[in-house]
Amino acid sequence: MDKQSIIKPEKIAAEQTVLWSPRIIGEIGDTYIKVARVQGEFVWHSHENEDELFYILDGQLRIELETGDVELSAGDLFIVPRGVRHRPVAGEECRLMLIERKTTRHTGNEKTPLTRSIEEQLAG
Amino acid sequence: MDKQSIIKPEKIAAEQTVLWSPRIIGEIGDTYIKVARVQGEFVWHSHENEDELFYILDGQLRIELETGDVELSAGDLFIVPRGVRHRPVAGEECRLMLIERKTTRHTGNEKTPLTRSIEEQLAG
Image (cartoon, rainbow over all chains, first blue to last red; front, side, top):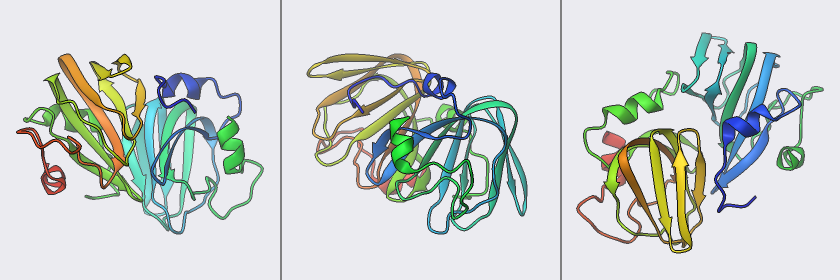
């Protein structure tokens, strides 16, 4: 990662060929900045010890929570608190930025065909 | 900070009455998410131990570095590596998001009339 370059998160997200597959674009302290291109339904999961920040770059994302749904549009930011089960759903294509501790696994403790390791997320 | 609310960074940045005065809007692990409304010239400074991430919400920002300037537009992300002296400059109003370790002081080791404590940044 060349830290002296201008990074264009929306463009990198748009280039992702695999849906729901986070790509790491930067890091600050113990935190990764990631982008993803998503459409359809993700899996229900939670992160026991990590809050997870969603920032919508383009499109719309619904985050289903057991306490009700949250509808996010471009420019909206939402933090899913640690331990809270959630499922992101996008009716149409959505590009988003994720900010989360480096230890966060994107499908939580669920092992699914969508699950990607951190090494895969670094490779893009 | 109510973590279950939708946060609108661009709107919060636009509401800041004081220029160059970061407002904390969220946290992830050891990292703060902040917004600021800026115009004009900031001070030359560096952060000895912390990288600092700029994400442009609206407008344009030039980050002057001793190795050359970087011109950022809405949607661009740039990380100033630790120890690198820099000065943000905005010819016109710019709204931006900052992602940085909680220990980061926004004017580095420089004490200036613009310097705000973390407590002030939390209060908004």
